Amino acid sequence: MTKTELQTALATATNTDKRTAGVFLDTLSSLAYKEIKKNGEFVLPGFGKLVKQKRSLGLGSRESMEWRL
Picture 1: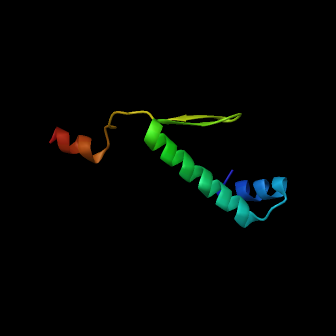
Picture 2: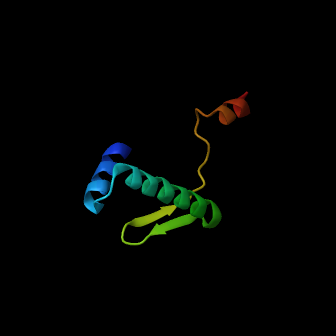
Picture 3: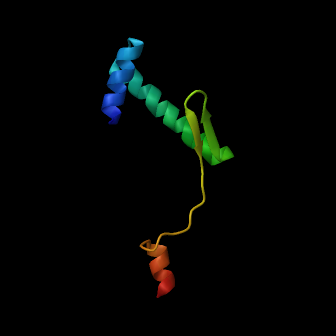
């Protein structure tokens, strides 16, 4: 589902316009980003939890290529 499709579905379900649904989604993603950066996780009750994870560099990343040289 694309962002536009999600906006349309949300607008239809809440009897609002697409612009309001888009602002809601943008605000929600901004709040999630800030909360994850601050606490390492974002919980959306009844939906799920987003958790920040530390991952190692992939073999194709620029930093790992420089390390091998």
